[in-house]
Length: 181
Image (cartoon, rainbow, N blue to C red; front, side, top):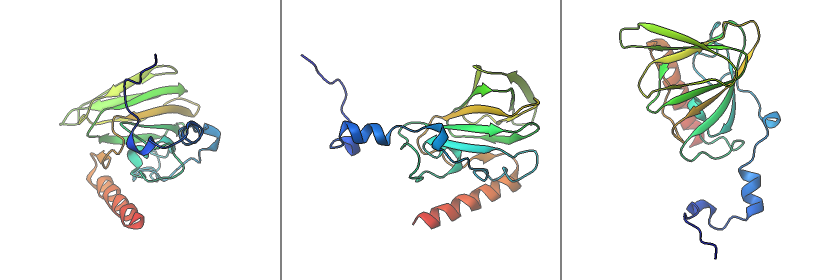
């Protein structure tokens, strides 16, 4: 005899398997890259595109109807052109970078700003612990695609260590929240 060991989430209780499969499947080819997802992504040297698959990730776009709804984590694919990167930042939970193509130099910093870096390539990953400043740079000659996984379905504001960028991020998120209500 079959027995279900875990219950469906309440929002899925009456959903058909067909509807569930449709709502919880996403093809990368159908994802529109967001080149304005983060406060620093308009700054030369920090340009990158977020392809949201599950949840809003660090973008704060948690109510995006075009993504798979997030439960306990988010998943995005980032495209990083050569010479571009992401500013030092923190999250309230861990963030994983998993390289798909190209190379990525990932760094972590301490409270004083001392930085160490590691270069990773396809099928390599790094897990950045909660509260530890981290970021990345594409020092390669080709664009890099990498997955980002954040350990929360609705992560808070990206904690940019640069106060000016963080203020822009807070203003962007505040405007998004006002627009959603």
